[in-house]
Image (cartoon, rainbow, N blue to C red; front, side, top):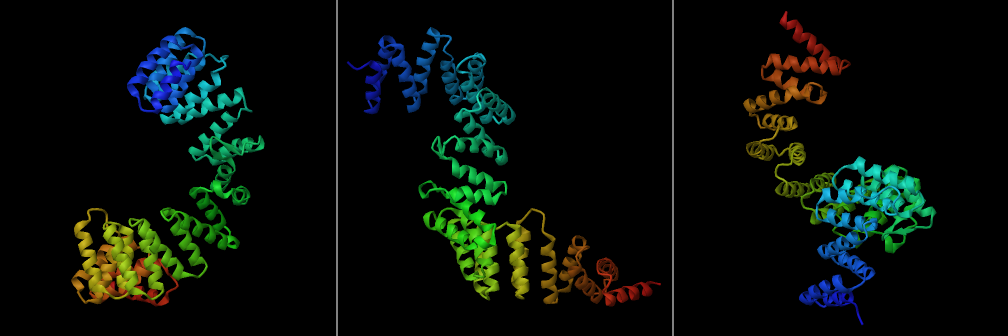
Amino acid sequence: MASFAERMLDELSSGQLDAAKKSFASALRYDDDDTIYSLAEELYGLGFSNQAKRVYEKLLGKYPKEDQLRTALADIAIDEDNTDKALMYLSEIATDSTAYIESLLVAADLYQSEGLIESAEDKLLTAYQQDDQEPIIQFALAEFYFASAKYKAAIPYYRQLIQAGERYFSGLDIVSRIGVAYALVGNFDNALGYLEQIKEADMTPDVRFQLGLTYATNPENRQKAIKTFTQLRDLDASYAGVYEPLAQLYMASHEPDKALVTYQEGIAIDPFNVKFYQEGAKIAAELGDMTQAQSLYQEGLNHNPNDAVLMTSYAGFLVQNEDHVGNINLLNAYFASDDMDINPQLYWYLAQSYTALEDFDMATKYWQAALPSYMDTADFLKPAYYYFRSEGEHELALQALQAYVQLVPDDFDMVAALQNELDQEL
């Protein structure tokens, strides 16, 4: 005859909740302790933590020395965000208890979830001191350090697992984990030694991406990196992180057409990624496709209207292509809608555009606005000097000239011009 616990589980699986409640009450009353303990484990795994808690509390009242019940109740308290109650159960477990190590691991999880990283680490290290050959502890420490971005600290514990023959643990491929860890600390040779061992079935998108990045660190492996990234893109086109490094590899391989297509594919997946528009537009311009470049800048700004980097890049493109009216319209609209700090590069671009259109009042305004930010930039100071001099702005011209000569003392024409300016003041 089936126990009430078995009957309850069958009723839960068939959706008979009212009947399951009655069977649960009968199980608590009539089933033996081992049976209801197993029931509690099943219920907790199914998400019925309240019912599991009732069983564990009943058993703890009957067997107060069974500390494993306390760790189970602590787990449930953590799930219920009842930190104080969880810590109470864990604090009741003595250091000589068979459940002590388990209590340390539960406490570490609790502290880590609360952001108390040092306390979590202390509990894990204490557990390791108790039994440094226990795979669960090795894995917990490795994962703790990996999650904390302390990859170098994680590696020895992953290595212990591998050396003990634990290729897989808790559903995780340890070889892939240690390979990624080595890559993230910059030990790319060791990283490849592990990453290239990974079976295709275990090659997650993140691991494949890291393999591609690791190949990319060595120019001799560039084609392997491209192959790895294209495989990732073909398997999971939504993996937005793959497009930029793949495009950069195409550029390094002198294949700008493929790089441009890659950025365009990236835009289709992540239309708010400013880098895709900016780099794609630059490549299009280098290929002589100014229409495509402008289209990418405009599309990028439609999605990211207040992005200062993209705005500055587009303004520079317009100035370089002598679309000064377009640049002025673009930046005046941007200044009117943006309340953030303005990149002084934009003042310089406006100064150039107004100068080209011979609107000298506005040009002077923006040359002067840009000047304080470019007192250490020779490429700005020289044209600024000539502009201010042509407009009779003697003090501004002298200021720009003096700063320029300090930066480029071997430009003898400008040194002579400075001497002439100073002689005129005498």
